[in-house]
Length: 453
Image (cartoon, rainbow, N blue to C red; front, side, top):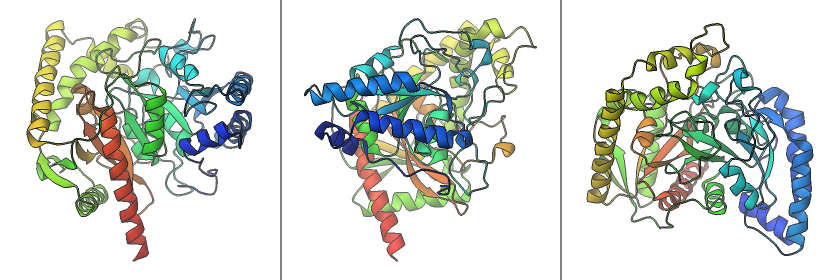
């Protein structure tokens, strides 16, 4: 992490909440701090598309009044948040990362914004993203590419996408947490590249009304934070639409060697080290196979995801003069050729694999599967190959309608973050967060032990 220009980390959300509730801190002061950080640092990081100073400070003042009157709403009350700019905010544009939508003014708040407001959260602004949410590297030539704060001072690392700005805003400590979306890895990939936590809940665990869609079948809203507990606080306060449950066991699946051949050496070494730390901490590691080779998930996923994205954005595709990212347009145009039969066959395959995955998890008694997030750390923006999306290990989670989380798990020799992904059963989000908290603690203990040596 580039400590020279990155402000200090915020305290955990639970600590911020305790300070606000006790009167030790105020939401106005915390919101002013976020706005000051954005004003001072975001010229470098370019994570925000729009900042709403007046509205945020007015909401913060109201939060302080409510808390002082004893009407505390929970752990997000008075705490600032950033929104990925595919989430409707009444009276504000929702661009979905496209200049073609600059005049798309929202008539009402998205359902997730209603939940944020009900929880007392303070929306400070909207963040940059990949155009139409179709891309995992985080680049956007028309609206701007956020700068990943990780790596060396002179690095220009890809931030990951499509929730690029939300991840950078959290990783650069401009806001305590942010909303993103994830259709094939768009929360977990930027979290891994930027060295933070990215939690993708089960589809529809967070409501999607008023969110610009890429794929109605596969889209999920998610949260980006700096710790698992922060993600848990967000999940509780936003009233995740799943049952509360504890981890069933400390048995974790792991992929066998045949699925890991694409890993760069630094990622492979980090994964092996992480698994050894977990075993030393008392986890039982069990070999696990998905219902099909991970490479087979690409065609099936694309037949659903990109064809649905082409349907949403078809009105923009016929005019080659319109400003559409050259890495986005060809994929959407090609997806026009997907037939209804191919789309339905892909959904049938996905449903069969979902059942098989659930059966195998139950048979082995697993609480989660541990696997990489990406095959390599973030490349430099100028080295990105848009023909090779970094979603090989993340897209199956969306296709199988699962929940997943990316945890910071180490760095390579250049200081580039490496993530560890944990995958849980659909609807078992709180159990996954419970496992993730234990894994996070074990990894942190293992890191302290290595440093002590």
